[in-house]
Amino acid sequence: MLPWLSSVASCLNPLWRHRVVVSSDDEEQPFRWYKNLERHSFGEFSCAVAKANDPIEDHSQVEVGHNAIFVGVYDGHGGYDVSHYTRENLFNNLMTRAEYSKNIDEQVISEAVGNTESGIVNLVENNVAENPLIAAAGSCCLMGVIWQGRLYIANLGDSRAVLGRRSGCNRIVALQLNEEHNASRKKIRKHLKLEHANDSQIVALQNGTWRVKGIIQVSKALGDEYLKDPRFPVAREHANGKFFLPHPITRPLVTSDPSITSRILDPNDRFLIFASDGLWEHLTNQQAVDIVLRNPRRGIAKKLLKAALKKAAIKRNMKYRTLLGLEIAGRRNVHDDITVIVVFIDHHLLHQNQSDPVPLLSIKGFVNELVGNIRHNLNGVYLVTFVILGFLARFLIFASDGLWDYLTNQQAEDIVLRNPRQGIAKKLLKAALKKAANKRNMKYRTLLGIQIAGRRNVHDDITVIVVFIDHHLLHQNQSDPVPLLSIKGFVNDVAESTFNRIG
Figure: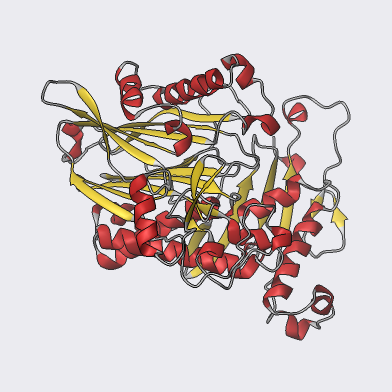
């Protein structure tokens, strides 16, 4: 078994028995999230995210294993569905393929990306009837893996990995590790024109920006199924003036085969910067590397984020503090979602067996939920429970897997956010049952009329409990305490709880 896999892939679940970090190290800020400094097996890392879209379309993760680290930056477009899905599935797919192959290499990484794309196609198939624009959701994907002293970089789209490397003159220079698949680059336009020689409009200048079919800047991405699969056209009435293609496609216009490179790390390789294009719109590679060099490690991703936001403010002739005060509705006009992850490489740790191994960590940037797909093996019986912690701990959703068969974490959270508290569990239940009916090509009312003997063919038992947290009540002594209750699901009586025996 691989060193990483023996500790990590043996429990292929989102928690991985990790400590999952959700909140910032410092004060809560509604549009920024960061982890100032954490350890990995051969160094340290720092993360920061700035939100411009609502909901945020950038998703990211860092997975720390024994003697290995995984970094993912997923810059979504056309919505968050695909970037969110990628964050929840790509690493799992990589671990599954690596465990099967007993190795991590370019082929394993390519297969993991391919399996993720296949899952996105299924996601679109299952949801396009009620959400036609899900076919227009896509995501760039930048992925880095360090394993056995080798760095692998896989890329789709225009996020960027930059290495800070000591040069011959003892200066730390920036070395870009991946090619950007963006139609603004002459090389990419030339390639697209060769691949689509019969389509004179394969690239078009739209509002001063080169785009594939005048619509999308990137030539490679996960998702964007309307540009890949003729089964998923976006009708004019749903296109919002952005996603409509006047003629059916006969071949993919955007592809999902990643560009993958690898290199053996050597002592001159000092640190890595992984970031979505929101950072690189405002900083050059060398500017970013210089900022890392001139500042302490702690909080360095936040420092890069701040430098980019300051430049964004200057471009709009506003003060940085004014930018920080903008409401979400106006932020996208100033800057994009920005994700930054800086990974420091301490070479004296790279090839040694550590007597004090670092904790296994799973950190997900600007996560609105703490996700626990906890499978306890009790004599061969798996109990599956999901727990979701709402943004800034506003609510919790406890549900059996019967709900999660039909709703993603983000979909469930959105339903809670967009509806009154009264009856919200019933609202989630109804959303899941409607999707169950849709999968069976039946109407919701038809499902409701099915007798118990036939219901298990349509959906599993479903339990949903939503707990709202009012923080102004959390730490105060209440003069009017609530009644003690004991409520048991699908039981008609409400009894007094024995909880008062505690304390």
